[in-house]
Amino acid sequence: MKQVFIGLLLTSSLIALAQSAPKAVLLRLDLDETVIVGALEGNKWVDAEDLSTSSQAAIAGGLKSVLFNNTGVIGKAMAGGKVSIGSTCDWVRVTDISTPVKLPYLPTYAIAAAWNPVPRAISSIANTNATYQKIIADELQQRKIAKPAMVSQVLQVDLDNDKSNEVLIVAQNPRLSFDAQNRLNGTYGSEKGEYSLVLVRKVIAGKVQTFSLSERVIEKPFDGTSGQPQVLTQFISAIADIDGDGKMEIFVDDLVHEGYGVNIYNWNGKGFSKILEWGCGV
Image 1 (cartoon, helix red, strand yellow):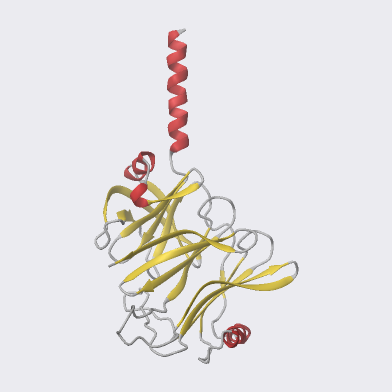
Image 2 (cartoon, one colour):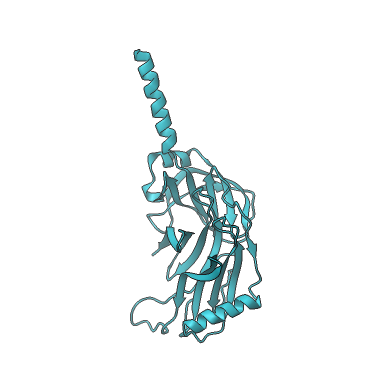
């Protein structure tokens, strides 16, 4: 009887250990380091500095990961092992990653999870498309912004598997750009009316509605007397299902004065809400 009890206790302990392992670990690949954005423990995303011992053990043991960006899955990687403090911010945790894939731009993302992170196709529409130029021009007029419409990105994907595509639009004036190492450039606003907008157009009950994920508009030029200069740069770097519910989240990478990060949004049935964020800055 005692042996049976011990066996049941051991089995229960193993089940509990398996259940406490993270459902997913999300990584951000940049030029100099691979950041642990967070781990999905149960139904909650946990920041890297607050990881459970189970998540830490999973990372230390190595993670078979899928690389993805705003075009879909782009390859595989092996991540994990040593975890250390980031080179700039002491709350950041970094680890190692190995992949033969040549990354088209930085940052790029990787996830260790049991499901397909990109269950539906993502397509790109030319940023010169007249329809979306007109949409942005109308959005600027509503906001009383006199600067010309400049569309940086137009992406199309069925985020929530309702058989209807959403359209994601990023507009920025001055125009979004990348440096020689394919990293996002930080564009500082210098004139009144310069802007960046991140919008989602979604069909609800047969009508198209426009949702704003993030807006930055220069109200007055920075003169150095107070506050900080404003950086306009925002970019949809990835679209993926990071929690295994079949719905795809939107990754908006951005830069601020002496800092950078990502905000991740999902559709909650009524609007778009931020479910996870990561950042580093001085």
